[in-house]
Image (cartoon, rainbow, N blue to C red):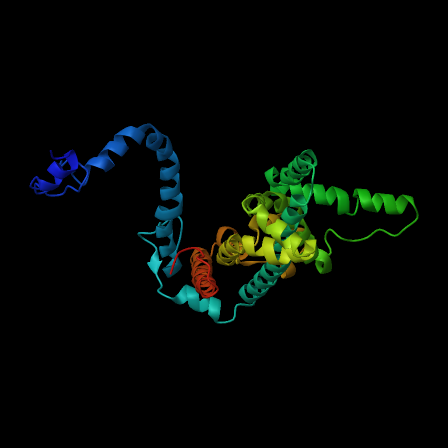
Length: 334
């Protein structure tokens, strides 16, 4: 008497249908059938996403065509199609030594350096401090207080700093009331870079800690227990366990920061430019505004913006290559 398995082994095998695989019953599956089924299933979600997709396409990609005015003597009343083509003349004006442009470039690079050194590590430090809190209620309360400034506009942030540090602000009024000399902070060119760096840290550090706290929550707690059993202190646990666990997100955000490094806060600086003067507050973004929108040099301003974008792209590519050399994926894989 033969068993079922023996009968199956002795029966001749039927050839598979084209496009089918073992275990599918021999039925052929068209390549586009699964995609179309998913499209019909998810079409309500896709319809909801269409307005956001349209906004991104129109204002982020279609608007790139406006870079053509960098090669024109653009006049708004003539439009792009009737403005004169000047080739690379607008770029030659930039690199022939325009003192205003060179000053704006120097200020931009210096502010970028300050923000990379002081602003970028601030959320990491705050995340590590919050992660060390034992009480979740205290942690949530501190997080709520730190997140709040992110939702304030730069107009309000600058106004708050003026009310606290200005000539008629709270601190100077207190100093005068107690017989001390007032301190000139707002409007002092020598203190301007410290002031704007402090403003950025106060406004954005709390919000930026969200990503780092999410990464910290994914680190295996057994690694801390094993290091504690080996006698590692809290500092050595942070250095050998916590920071390596955060390295991937730190590298990724640093690459993105470098790509946007030449954009150092247009609205923040423009609001305070009149108080300190353009010598210390003029950056590439305000140079574009002052010379393009105010001065009417649209072509030169567009050339500045195009050069700034190309420099940012090069910085991202170089930083991504360095990330690959360090064993990280970066923005894209090698």
